[in-house]
Amino acid sequence: MLDLIKDISHGKGVNVLISSHLLPDIERVCDRVVVVLKGQLVSQGKIKDLKAIEGQPLDVDLREKSDSFLSAVRAKGASAAEMKHATYRVQVAGTRDNAMNLILSAAKEAGAQVRGIRLAERSLEEAFLEAIQQ
Image 1 (cartoon, one colour):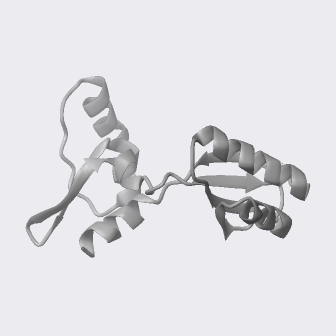
Image 2 (cartoon, rainbow, N blue to C red):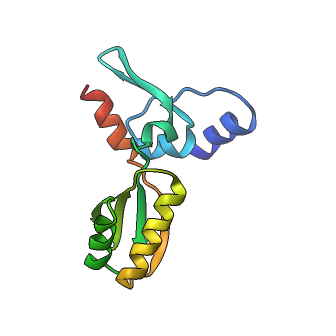
């Protein structure tokens, strides 16, 4: 059913309205969401915009956990926190190039192998919960 909805809405140019609390399904087939609480509109927009985190931090995946990497990033003036085993959220002031250079330099100093770097985002569920708690 979800594939049919996605095909109709994306392939045929027809707008489809889905009402659901199953956020993974919504994320799979929808581009935009509207959050309604007690009959009032509390949030709306593109899913990618609602999932964005202010300041655009980066999530850095390392081959293995590295406290040395965390220390090196912080010593360079960035904020960093371990999100889960071997994944770190890094916030760097300045341009994306500055952030990349800082992250790669810290990894080299720490002897850590970078597996991936991506723009951090919250889950749609986190965005939904924030919207209904306002």
